[in-house]
Amino acid sequence: MNRNLIMKQAINTLRTLAGNLLLAVAVNVFIRSFSMTAGGSTGLALIISHYLPAISFSLATTIVSWSCFFLGLLFLGMKFALTTLISTIGYPLFVQLTGFLTTSQVTADPLVAAVAGGCLMGAGLGLIIQSGASSGGLDIPPIILHRKLGWNLTVTMWLADIAFLAIQSSFSPLTALLHGLILIACTYLVMNQILTIGTSAVQVLIVTAKSEEVRQLLEQDLDKGATLLHGKTAHAGRETDVILSVFERKELPALRQRVSDLDPGAFMVVSNVQEVRGLGFTGWKKIKAQDILLDE
Image 1 (cartoon, one colour):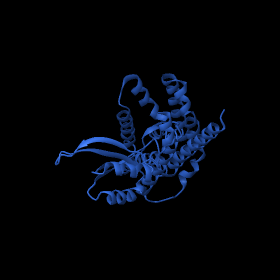
Image 2 (cartoon, one colour):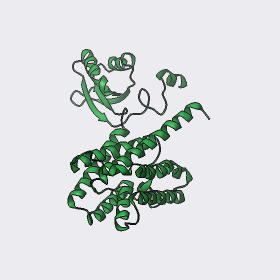
Image 3 (cartoon, rainbow, N blue to C red):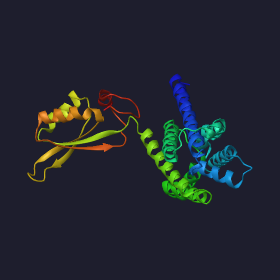
Image 4 (cartoon, rainbow, N blue to C red):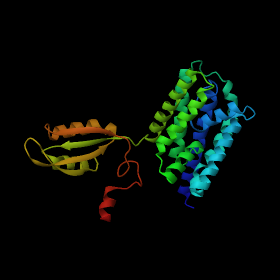
């Protein structure tokens, strides 16, 4: 096996384990310490351990994780199940190993705990997904329903979370429910930020009478690719090329200045883009422009 591939797999495995460790720490330090409500497999484990006191939280977590693993194996196949295996083993183990943290007093404010716990859980989930693995757990039933019955994946996951929160509200105070909602919101917010680290950029549309000069500026001076879109100005009815390109945010001031120097009358539209993959950015594969030209 290729040495680089082995190294990449090792890094991804460590990243997945680190993500599961962050999840376990967040659960024990913040959720259990403050008796917060939670969604997903954590929420179901809290429900099981409440109504069946003989089953500890860590044991309930193990039961939920392995039940979902076997569901995934049965309905989604071995290949999918293997992506969840590290989390299926690692998360319950880390929950048990970090169980002593439930007595820690990191903060006395439950609102701070909800935000901090959500940030930790979001970071953990982001690391797991970035590594190409799955957090497993109760993500699996909605995936099965989506693939087999066509149910909307996001809606199904949210409905499951709401159902678990509703059940927990029967034995938790209203404040715990509200803090649980804040925790879930922070989790998704931070997870999305982690998943787009290093890949967010700005998209630029430039309308100018000097489109050829600007194109050369982008490709030769700024080492950026560009796409020419055919356009027509509404007022003067002039045929023109509209230049489309993507830049890292830090490169935008230089672009503004250079385009302004070439054509003070240029019209530029800048918009945020969530993720960019391809030439000059994170990629399917790192390539150079000349390699593409040679292939053509």
